[in-house]
Image 1: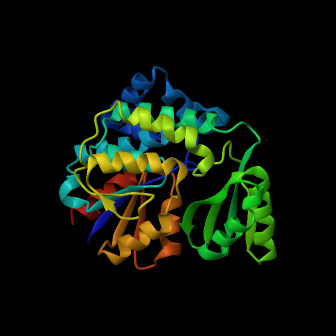
Image 2: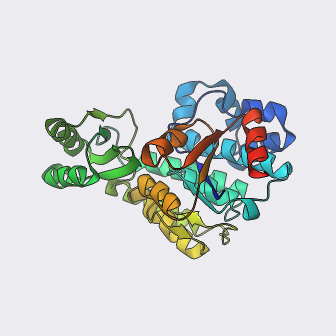
Image 3: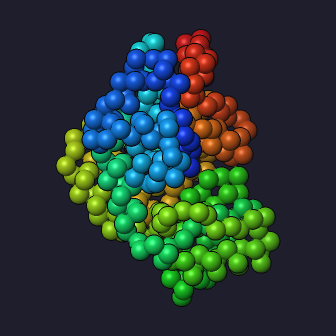
Length: 314
């Protein structure tokens, strides 16, 4: 069995996430305390008690999701998991790439929390409210959606932001262009083409101010080579050099999350099992749609951790 760990992105948050881990394990409580201290506020209180609209804010959801993932990792490590010997690769969806890098030792927990707070605020501030939009398009090929984006260019920026696999693509850009792209997708018999309730056009070139902010923020933190290779979002291939990782994280703000290709890369390079570490099971569901030869397992409760450790140590 060759294993990769994956880490969820925005949309996997829910009120109460991580509470069972904190109640059950001192190592998890220590992670949430350290994140609270790094941010100078009780993010854990918002995570566990809401309100949901506050947790869903980009600047909160990003460090919160990372905290749950790292809490689970620290619990597993305290119970004997040696990441370097048991896990061949790590990868994360969008903000989840930061969780993966924290797990692999590229960034400290405190630095990762602060980077994600900066990232969330910068992405939110990059585009005035109402100017940008995102739409999910289900049931068309990547090439067809790419052609649609090109055909609406006269209306403004529009590009593929996420290739999630299973025929699920997300486009992002200026509102008029994205709305027209969704309409054209319906004309081309997409199963669904719906505008998403998001606060900004993530992973589009409109995020350039946020990319600049992340370039500056990343230049101020220590980045170490990861102890296991990280399969980067914008490359869908493994990276082990810290300076290259930082460069790709800046590119990621305006670039495409190539998740389908990431999972396909795993399957083509000997990985047999993907463990999704953290809140929810979105990535585990995508695995089944992308490549049924891969086993996907979500790990976010004490029982999940026990089962995963048993399997990993078998």
